Length: 157
Image (cartoon, rainbow, N blue to C red):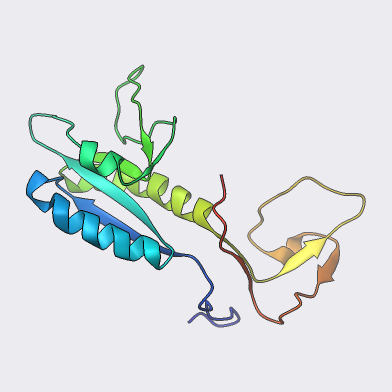
């Protein structure tokens, strides 16, 4: 709980981040767990640790995620592109690489759901702007109908 911020309610989207070496021996357990999480409406994100020889054998993880066409591998060399699956990230098996991929994972988590605690409108309509404090923007406060946070669990592209 954070002071001044209402607690997350039950309808808020849930996310599980799985860090795995992609061992093919774990596929059956992974499928079972994935089915259970999806049944509960939980979004799954995978961080695949690359083997020391650089092999990329994350095919079983790709089948559990939604296709995407943007790069997600931290530390890629200039000009190196990669076909990526949304929800599947790759990192070398070291602390620096994991720290480098964390911001991209979190950006995708934020695309999973939107949570609005306070809102303010301004006229004429201004373009969307993210600010550190809502007090920095001139406008009129909008009262949220529930009196609490507004949570939109639909996926955000």
